[in-house]
Image (cartoon, rainbow, N blue to C red; front, top):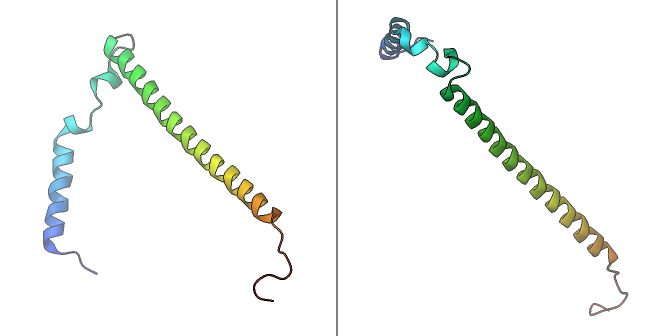
Length: 91
């Protein structure tokens, strides 16, 4: 199956732009900067904070599903505790 000519031209232009612009491929100043600079320290703190937020949200989801599981288990026990009485409206 052949690609359309327009898609081929777009692919060639994108590849050429990426290869001809080395600034796009280089790392940011934080990645290759001094490890003791304030910018590097603040970036590390920001990464730690964001990882903490992600962990907090995941713990919240775990707690929510655990709560659902406990409630379903309690409802199942409650349903099983009822007995069917012989007789009733049908007899």
